[in-house]
Every structure is written in structure tokens, then in C-alpha cells.
Length: 323
Image (cartoon, rainbow, N blue to C red; front, top):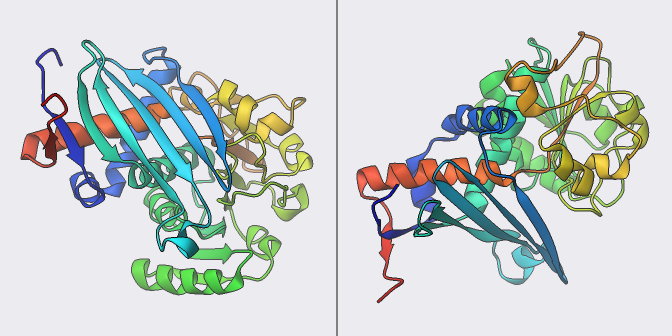
């Protein structure tokens, strides 16, 4: 990318059109493999409290490109503004000359790349015949996770739980209609998790709610909600009784489930499992936990793919930054 290119502005609708959700899975698997082979820049992460919400800042780079994402999370936005709780932008730069290549809406990218990372982990760590999926939390990430997991495992039934039962009921009806998968809302999260071979935590909980007794042997558990030092979904006994696979180990120690479990050793990073450097699941009876904090490398890979697709078909609006 040595030629100076115009800076493109990409909207949510353009992002949704340019790269189908299924394409993110192989894209994200590839970036985890590249990370494991040492072919990426280090990822950086920062958090800023801004009551009543918070900002997450993530940055990293691949060959020739660097991206920075600033994302805000304000849970009162739906009630006060009628807008989603998560908002932000990704800035993509040419890593060889600093030129800003694109500025794009980040919540859509985050939603799709996060679900894709969980799907990559499920592809390598969940039982091959896993057919029942439990979702704890029905927020912005939930529907994308159903679609992504169904792309890598033969999902026949989805059980959903939310601390707001009405939201779980609405979500179950939506998923059943949208994907044609039997979807049921349950009142107790353990009722869902004990019946499922794949369990995904998608809550911003500050107190752990999933215990070892809540999952059966052989379950794959993805802890996606813990992306800040004060967030936590899994009790210590579940982590101690499982093989824990981290997305990025140092980051999981800072903000993930492993942040709250200093005595628990991770079995591997996901990229090491992807390239065959470390084993993933070692038996059909083993409980495997994926500690997913979300890495900026996922944002870089997605942003670069979106930028290339937009450049190829003329999408996006040119930003006259230097006029």
C-alpha cells in the first residue's frame, strides 16, 4: 500500500453489505494463526471510565496496515437516546506511510468479528456433534453468535436466558423466525447450560454466575462478556475444572476471566490451537473454556478486508481531510 489513497468513510449499511457474516469466520481464524506464528504487531488495550459508561481503545497491526478502535459502551443509550448501547469507530491506516485509509462504524464490525472468533474457537474446541446452544445474555452480540455457531456446528436447538425475561422471550421468537432453529427462553440460566454442549456468556456481569455444576462434561464454554477488569461471568471452580484457552493470554490476564483466577494456567492461546502448536480439546469428557476478551487484530483484519472490498466496488465516501 505505497500509493497514497483517499480516506474512505464506511457506514453501517455498507459494512453489512461488503462482507457477509460467514466470511468473518475464516478471516478471523487466519488472523489468529498469523498471530501465533509471530506475523502481527503487538495488540494494545486501554480502558477509560466515563460514568455512566466506559470507553475501550484497541490498536494493532498486520503487514502494511494498522487500526485503532475507540468504542463506547453506555447502557442507558437505548432508554435516553433510542440508540444502541455500543457506539464507536475504527480508523485504518497505511502502516508504511501513516495515511488514513478508512474511518468506519465499529459496532457492526465488533459484533461480527466477535461472533466469528467464538465460532473459530467452537470449530476447534466444541464436540463435533454439539447440537444444543445456550446463550446467557440476549444483547447486541446474541443473534450474530447464533448464526456464527450454526455455521460450524449442527445446531438444532437454542436455549436463551436473560436477567430480563421479556427480552429473552422476544429474542427467542426472533431467532426462531429468522433462522428456523427451535429457540426457547428459560427462567434459570442453569436450566439452559446443563442441557447444552455449547454455552456462551454474553453478559456484562460484574459478579460470576456460571459454576462448574451448571455445565455437563464435554461442554464448550465461551466467556465473551468479560472485556474489562471488573467484569466476570465464570466462578473460579468452573475455570479450575476446565482447560482454558485464551484469545490473547496477556490480555486475558488483564481484563478476562483469567484476570480473576491468577492460579489457573491457560492450556494455550487459540492461535496455537489453530496452527496445531498446542492441543485444544483432549477428550470428549473435558470441559473447555474459551476466554474471549477481543483483540485488536480482529478489528484490523476485518477493517482491511472491508476497505479492500469498498475500494474494489467504489463503496464509501471520500473524506477530504486535507482540504
